[in-house]
Image (cartoon, rainbow over all chains, first blue to last red; front, side, top):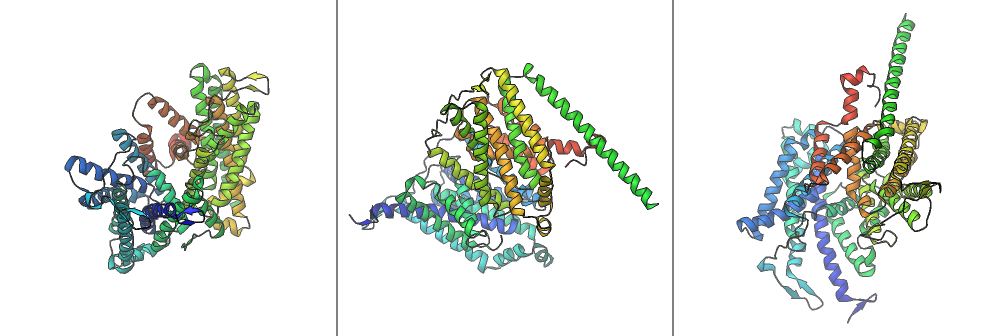
Length: 295
Length: 333
């Protein structure tokens, strides 16, 4: 058996893959957080709950309407995105003129409410969601065994991440978004409907979280508690990356996922705190974060 | 002429401030008297829980209300101190007062470490960093030996205060908790009204100006953070003696959320508001403990409602109300 640093190469690559998958979720979620924060100046604590909602909606769609994974991949984010947009329009939008902390507290309350409701209705136990038949099974790459679904998750998240980046950096809508981030009043004066833009942005962010949730459903169990512990890690990712740049959020997400996977190989006890440790070190050396602009 | 006008205005202000102090003193004395006789009417454990959480919320408010820093990691200090006190009393056989003091010292050290990292960013980032570091401490407690993982430290003896007074008698315990609570509140009150506290308020109002006046803002923030952590530790250490256990619940992020809710509900930046907020939340939890309806849903909804329409909190609204103004409270913020 081939060894690297005294570790069998299969174990190393296996953990690397898990790291890459976790990194995909970190990247998708921190991307959504960064998009929302960029324009709304709100840290969306409910992001984890929206991720959970995505997985749950997919599960319920399958159970009650027989809607399969592929359709759910579009329908679930759409539903969660619309719900998010409604919440933004009716409630969150009243808080923009206040201190940014109130937005955080409001979305925190929203997250508690959503999670509490789902725990009340469906219990805390996880429910399985089966891998779509097209992606079932695995393939032997010669040096390791790769479950196809996990490979799919990595590829599709990369595509969605890059797609979102292109949407924001290269399209007309994206240019409005970026302009409104810089100076909302001026953009409004040019006749752009900024409040609508804000609503769309929040809806898009929520939909991204829900999309990640649907992707996660076959890997992890669908449970009301799947979001919150994850979102705290994603906060650390966002602090490391700095929220100034979309690409920064994506790259940091993957990097930290891989770092976590590698820690599982070399020093398993520290694997669930390694991201926080990295965050603390980055803060001490470079307080603005790796890609951050604003301190 | 202008001198005369000035004097009248000053006199009016002085009278106003006296009126405020009088009203305040009357309220405090009445509250204290109520707490003294409360064990005759209420279940002592409930009252002690209330006092512990009230102190915790006031300690938290020291940071949010008077320095403008939202910490999402105060469970670390509360729960950390609970573990330290429980360990010292149970394993090392320390007396309760020494155990609580160790809890306070431990919480202060944790506060120093977390503070040094967290104050490097402001506002929203500060909240996220404290939350992340607190989650790290949670995992540490989950895996480390002395906390006994999922079980927590159970059956902590209350022991004898100063080796003399038996705290397993519930009345003795209550008055011990009340005494510590009052000491804690006096410390908070002195701290807020000290020159240090004034500088903290100036940082809350305008950080850039405080810097330009030559204050080392970071050092003051760190001082406030450690102070708040130590007092939260006081509440946590006390709590582990009251309930005779310390578990992971105390260090979990939900606890940090709970203390924010108590403060928000009672009134951010009011001295006594958090006490009322804690009272409401603890009562609600007790009330719902028997039903299977999850507290989380209500907590979440109350959070949203508070943020949307009730940002001044109960005491803040009372101060701003006609009755509160009549009693001369409007200056107290």
